Image (cartoon, rainbow over all chains, first blue to last red; front, side):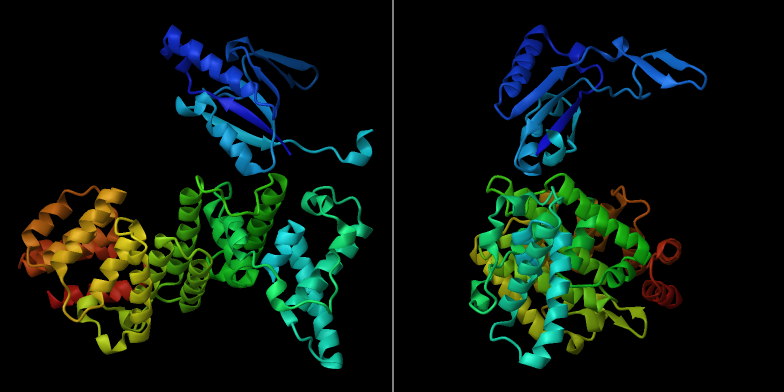
Amino acid sequence: MKYAMLIYPKPGIEAALTEEERTSVTAEYFALRDDPRCVDGAHLQPGEMATTVRDGGSERLITDGPFADSKEVLAGYYVLEAADLDAALEFAQRIPAVRFGGAVEIRPLVEIPVETAH
Amino acid sequence: MLASLVGFLGDIDLAEEAAQEAFAIAAERWPREGSPEHPVAWLVATGRNRAIDRIRRERTLQHKTQLLRADVEAATMDEFDLNDSSISDERLELMFTCCHPALAVEAQVALTLRTLGGLTTQEIARAFLVSEETMKRRLSRAKAKIRATAIPFAVPADHRLPDRLAAVLAVLYLIFNQGYPDRGDLAVEAIRLGRLLAELMADEPEVYGLLALMLLHDSRRQARVLDGQLIPLAEQDRTRHDRAEVKQGRAALERALALGATAKPYVLQAMIASLQAEEAIDWEEVALLYERLEHLTGSPVVTLNRAVAIAEAGRPERALELIDSLDLRDYRYLHSSRAELLRRLGRREEATTAFEHALRLAASDAERRLLARRLDEL
């Protein structure tokens, strides 16, 4: 089963780290991405760079900033192929954001039935 | 039987349906043809075979991954060539699945009672004071999450075991406390599950600790409430304590201690409960055990209990000091304990105020009656 690991770091944590810490944390993120079970992943630009599109009635409403009006913003994700939730949890617990006061949300991907996949 | 079917089918819903079908067939066939030599094995085999038939018919059941991986053709069991001991006991796996931390605690409790306790959805709903509809939704949501997120049906690996076992024990203790003192059936169910767990994990001291704790508390059930009024331990009629249960509780505690655990929360609480089952209670020792428990849990409720033990040991002033240092303003036992101490110290007015405060916070009629009597006595 594939699991998305949605990473929500503690707001402001990046600025709070020293240059050295940042380098080593980045290396940790790359190392996790190198796990053969990790089939996808990305680091997103900060929330200030986000643009959100909504239905504004007669036209599409385009606004500056992320969709959810909260301090915690999705900062990146991994997609992990794992046998079960315990294996996914183990991977998630190693994501540095957790250690630094953030959180990781684990969401299984909807699997596409084999018959309709071809 | 259900656990074995879940283990094979990898899905609780499917297993429940298969079990129901097997029982229906048995009800129809056994009276006519006589019951089989190994009824459990027969039921499991029949349930399996029915489930396989159904899956063959409905090939779209993509999420039954465990079954799809299995060789379905080879898996069909011969109903007449098996015995009950060949059926694998997978109740422990099921327990860990039901008590997985990815499920909400109330869902863990409900699922455990439903699949391992054998309570009906209606009975569980009644015990937890929610409508049957709500409980049905809670159960089906939990089962859907188990399926959708692939919560494993397995005993966790060693490094995860302590945390995961703690979750299982917490669920059993919740069930017990929900049943104590007035829902005896739930307490009995919790003890039964505790015994089962002790049988399946014979090397875990905390399992025996919890079992001992539940048995020792349960032994006082008949004496704890009299004519609808809560009776404090000191005033309980000890002839109403269940001696056999005390003995069983102490045996479980001894087993826990033999496994080398004296600094674990349930074991410590069981040690306290065991001391309290004595005719003459060594309150100094009880206070000491509460102190150790306090170090482990950091809970102010434990400190409150230690204060009560200190008072019983003959130092009410020290106890009062300790209680007044606690930040537990709306905890009803704080006020009733405090009131009791003030009464003993002869500080009547303060005692009255404290009893009245406790009375406002009381959660049951039995408790209210005790507090009202205390107020009268002042």
